[in-house]
Length: 95
Ligand code: FES
Image 1 (tube, rainbow, N blue to C red):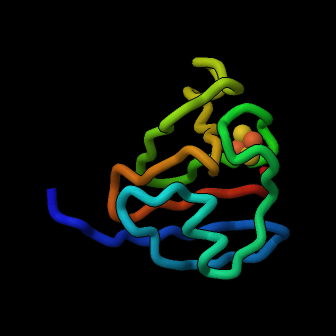
Image 2: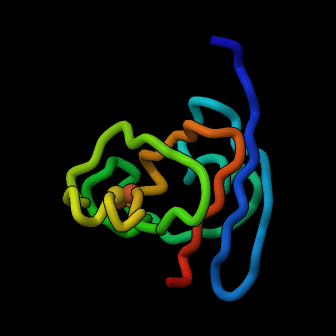
């Protein structure tokens, strides 16, 4: 599969940011590289500090010891574990 770079729009603290999201890179890493500060702690899928919610697009989590099926159905995801499965993704930390 060819390397591709998608994009992610992030809403946090009432502001919207848009940046690149390279394939295979977890969301937290993509945002950190872009200088967008978002909450996190363990970076291992265990604490839930990095939880955000998907608004548009698709993601897949490498590991998840926090969210249950109902959370995932509601769109919640762990930024430290999520890789993009679509080119364009939007997430929010605000609600
Ligand atoms: S930082 Fe702990 S679950 Fe993502």
